[in-house]
Length: 626
Image (cartoon, rainbow, N blue to C red; front, side, top):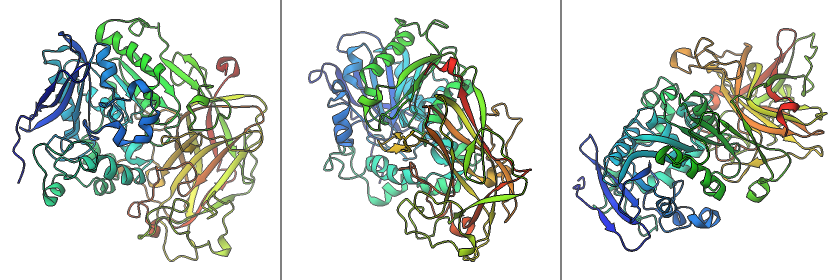
């Protein structure tokens, strides 16, 4: 039986240097309630509000949620009320803000259906903002700030224009659910979800027994629910994601964000190492928002801790003070006073997952994105597996081949990410390149050493001519090609230079993906650019993939920055599956990538009619000053 909803609010005005109101009920239009915690200064007054709404648990302490991470963040933010990816109440109340932290429907102390990233969660957050505006302790201005999930939701809510919303600070937050968090180039990104959902979301479901015993916040105040009711009260996200192959699926139509409608001030903070989830969203959220005052700031480092760096918190504070308090000490609200883009220059090999070493990366302020005077420069692939700036002469047709296996029905991951190695290719189809996993699923194209220091900043596109042929050692007839593109950086000594990924893992410069049946570009779409091809990715835009038919494709590689030293090299990698640096962002779902559809000999075609190249955004030396 459903729990009886009642008033469970408590108030503690003595234990902390702020007033702590726990489990405050916010009425929803559905007739249910959302529960939030309110942290507010003790001094009477009306204060601006910083609001978050998410599934991880407003009452789950950061130190329990991720002890190792908690131990590494700025000590000023190591408190009993610190929570994963959200602003720290003690800091912000001390600086004259109220912090409102809400549990999404179906999580923590909020009853309802657990359905992350859904229209219902967006509506709930919208309600939180409009509720906060009307409270007696509120100045009537609300800012949104947080990391990841607590950043992505900001784009969605801002596009709905809730009353009182005055500013956004999305740190590492995707803005295109289809292309960034669910389907990279149309390929299901399942591995992160498979880890994330049971640990960080389902573990906090409303009514789930044993949370207190696991030190995962308090038990549901209104009582535990039975197993069947818990199951009925949550949506099986993976099954929905599998079914949602195209943008016109209801999952995406219901949560599609009209970024152009966003008009409030935005400080979008993108992590250059977030190459498989958030970086693209921060860049495109910034470029597409119509806000008069909008800013794009790049950072490096792990996903969890830069938000709490003292220097980053100072930027957050000055931005929110400007637009929520009218106290603009920096010039955020003066057109042209603060540079719209604050770029971080990734120069040199400083290692990875080393915040101190990453301080060597210098900042440069820019007036726009993409950068002015960007020189889009083509580097051509050759049959000798080189990457050259001159157009190659290939008088006769030729191919560079590599294997594709897909995912066996009983496999949990792709070759190189934990599954049993696939069978070797048949002798007559020995691939011409070897992957980093030794299974022949990759070909690499390496440049000559750069003669001068070269900055690459912006959007990258790989232009390829591809086909798939039948593998004579297999019985299937392939009907799809999944392309995985990686850009790597080799030092003058030949060592790969890696950067800090989201979880502290080593990652390359950038990655891109494309399911070839979704190759169709819409050049008439207002968002289409030569450096950022737009695809509808709708069920109506699907095109067939036939054995031995050659298809020209443009593969979007996510935006980036890197400074290539003189003597260093670049490597462009083309693969049929995830390669080194994919980390927890694997594409290994056997339903989405079945072996009977994907297994075959993938080919890149060369010849007079088939030029293959990658277009790099080169910044002239006089401008870069790297």
